[in-house]
Length: 243
Image 1 (spheres, rainbow, N blue to C red):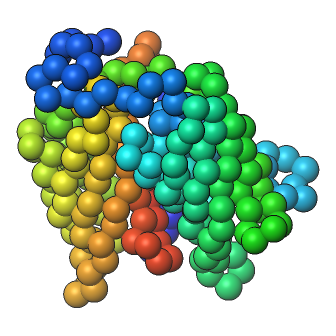
Image 2: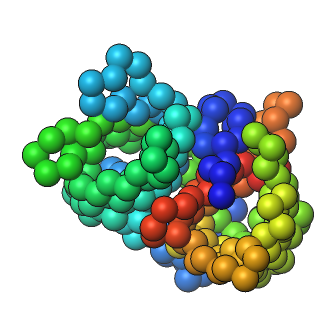
């Protein structure tokens, strides 16, 4: 299956309170004075490369994270937070001459509310470095009703359409005659990051994907979109902007 790459509003990639104060109405508060969780845009530079590639990343309050790059690479994180740093493990997928290449290793970064600077390592060898800028959209609350509607993306000859209900459940189809059934979930209603789990069925074969999503509201001439980043914990992933 192809990797989906969508042009976002401010980055080419693989795409207030309102309801009361933190802790009220069942909302979850963020850890105090901790950097790390956020929606990011920035760059990734593979070790030995002369140029960096644009990336987007989502790191949720529960330590789950995903990052997708313009060059077709994808990384999934599991991290812990301290006052000025994050550290943990990652699983990576990247295109290669012999098919999708898999890597795994450690991730570490230091930062501030403005962003993160860190490295991906395999053993004692640095695999790449990244510089991520924190985007203020992460500070908007999340609500499943916000995602309701029919959303589509098209890129590189591949198209995907999802219809999302008010409870976050969705169904969909793509141009490869595959069908999708799944659901988005709330991680922390204070912040703009959603969990996602779905099955994709194609010609009798079914895979389960998990990942994260963020809602980007309309801005200027740009429409609202849902940035979806998910993988099957093996060799396939989806990185798409649904509009």
